[in-house]
Image 1: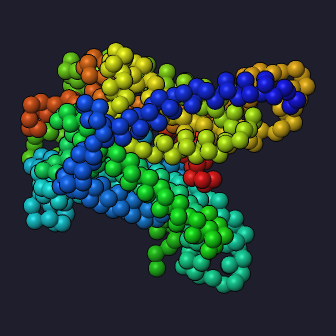
Image 2 (image 1 turned 90 degrees about the vertical axis):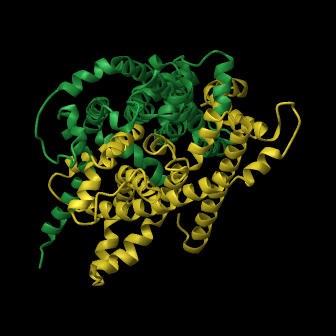
Image 3 (image 1 turned 30 degrees about the horizontal axis):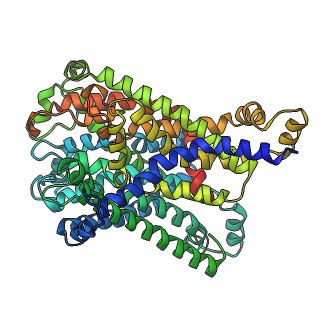
Length: 292
Length: 275
């Protein structure tokens, strides 16, 4: 296209400005404003008190630990089960189309609404899941899911894994289907076994997909809020109080604006560290294998 | 030895069981009388059958109003995010400019920060300009939330539209704006409808903003409205009604998934495979 430079700039500005203005107001400004709340007190003086208090707040470290445990465990199980499901979906069978629809249902259900459903399913004395475990002789009595710290942590793990495995499986399936068929055929000629093909072909070629999925999932799991807020409110005690619900409780229920902002600032720092770490891993793999 | 087909169908059966078992119990209890939720031990198969939960919930909470709120917010935000996202994508992939990678990457990176880390400044801003309890208080943040995915998918799609077409358009005297509106948008309807579905589902399901920016109970969206119904204590929860309401508001999503599963899967995986 032959156009004048000034017209071009005018149009570029026109097309990009709505997105840029909205991002500045609703992403960049709040992130920066939060840091300001964290380091400037009500009199307008700079202070490190709030950041320092957060670093000495056992509840903050508890929440960090809960969040890391939650993200690592859920993402691990989602990847493993998701990989198995993806392999199954990649096989040919009757009813594949229906199966894929069934697969999208857990993903499409609103997390907050399903959390209400899980609250019912996990109820002590009336809930189907504790009784199912008891009748299958997996536990001595119907376990108290939501009043026991360990069990309520397991409850949020189950609810999150249940919802996200199908989504992860679909991402891995897309990666599987991108592997050229000829590669399998040439390994067949070489007489490779099923496991051989899996270990030397499928898994190495899926590494880029695994890493991207891992990154998206881990960052998302790190911000977990809806599920915990509705299912356990962070309790019992602080057993399931991840960082997002902790920030929310501090800011909106205890009205500790500065303390909440300091916690949010450290949480944002965690996110930056995770992104850098994943980028570092990607680059290392790229240098070693020339892919990703 | 087990034959291969049998193993696959066994695996597929287990997958279906995995996806459907919690939903089975919810559907079961939604048709049982409300006391059934307090049977101990619980029921595992239908005993009675009643629609009373489905009709009763409309008397307990303004569910129709919540649904209207959700529809208004999710539809408007979907429209805006498609408009602004496709415009930005056009800027990135057709007009091209220095710093386009920086623009796309910061769009995606900013999307990774949890809503909880930025919600208070937005709440304060809305409260200062009296925008709380206004549909815009959700429409605007949702629009921004949809931008990374929308821009990403649309930019990839635009890149694959043949350049000859754009040249022909400019020979025909179409301006840059005209090319966008008359050539690019009609050509990208498949991609636009894919992201529209993904964005709509995401906005319908959003929780933390809807919980915070709509303190008036009449302005709640279905997601917040249903998750906040409760009796004073857990043992007074109207479980049957809550579950019936939860199922009713997810039916539109299930239909969408059923009709557009191919589109949804291609949209979801577009980012991950290329990423």
